[in-house]
Image 1 (cartoon, rainbow, N blue to C red):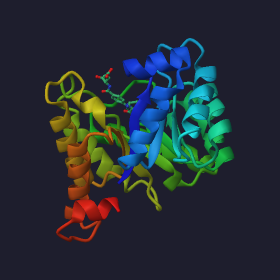
Image 2: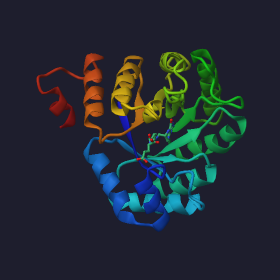
Image 3: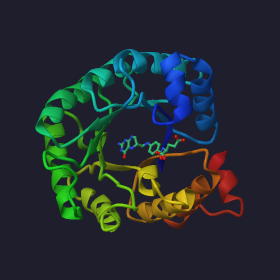
Image 4: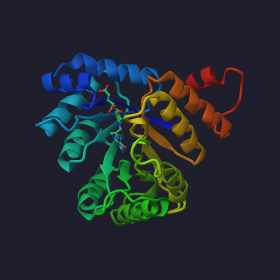
Length: 261
Ligand code: THG
């Protein structure tokens, strides 16, 4: 599993304030803590509140780079913000994200081709988020086809079948799991799959329990990567154990420790 640390996001109050006041310490602290706990990538999102998102993303990338060389996931709905982040962060970053909307694909696929970097494709089109697995897979196919047209290898497309909060869309959760499996059949090599895991538990009381239970289920369906909280030890332990049970790692008595060393 590829762990993309979610905690440098303007949605978090402390991070949002740090971005607004250009206070480096909370950003550096969040970067180091996540890397120490096993993040393979760090997701950077300036949040919806930023009124100068390009400058904010540039500052965020530069600040994180003072702490770590860990690859970055440049997370924004705005192509100009993503380009600004990539220009500094370089081609080992992930573009987060395009959707299946024609306008977004036309803006972002050329960027993925130019930088040679992976691109996350949300299964959202002009009609929003499809309600079932086949609808999600259909949008995923549109994204993979667009990648191929632009010379982006299909395994550089990371399909995100869009997990919504269980508190409002309980009927979607099993469909997302099915979509993870279906997307693997779209091309050879197949696209990767990724989820913004913490979305699933927004507005619930037992967030960590809901997150880790869903992550284990998604791993059983073949999930490759998750934007998640690496500081949640129970979540990380559940992930490592699920991978063991899926025969991705070798069993030993100290498998948790072995995974981390
Ligand atoms: N897919 C992709 N990218 C994404 C998402 C996705 N990026 C953003 C988001 N979704 C994933 N990251 C987060 C980060 C934080 C939370 C959820 C998803 C979260 N935050 C607390 C909340 O809203 O309750 C904030 C609490 C606080 O302020 O402390 O849950 O789906 N490709």
